Image (cartoon, rainbow, N blue to C red; front, side):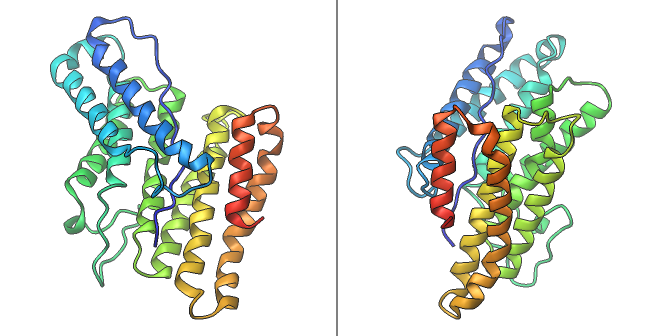
Length: 275
């Protein structure tokens, strides 16, 4: 199944005055450049196989920069309350890089409850991401790092975003559907948490576009797996994600008014969904 990308959130460039954070600022800039490359394809309605530039080397640069900052200046980052920011930026880089290094699941392997495949099948980057998410959660709960709302939202949704990527590599429709459902559950649950996400905010809009991305990919999977066998069966399987997408588009209407770029993204999404 072809890779149908998900809308990538850009990291807000913080006002970093501490000299120790120079690599963090550069890493943020590089991550945002990678996100712009992917989002440009998304807005045009293309899947991520059609990109003006390969974003993954850009994410590797960002990861290298943030790793350098953490290795050299962890104590200073903690003092400046920037260590959580650094860890989340690293997690975002690893997420994008895992989407470029996913390996298909072997026959008979069981899917874990959190959407992560069997430990023996994980790539090195995937292991790093899982371990880092656990570290961030532990440090945040212990009060050892500070995370802003955006970071908290992304920490919550990263497992769901990974499930979207897992679905794109599925060898059967049943497996893909399971991952797509899991991704939507995570994204919907986070978007509904008003303590984290203000309705109509940029983060709310991002999460809805991420959900639309998943619905679009799920619908495509239905046709990819079943169209040659039975067109009516393909349409039947595609009905649920299409209905979910229509509801999401309706929810987005009041939020995209006056924003030409978002309106273009909505138009492209409708076209790709056949709406």
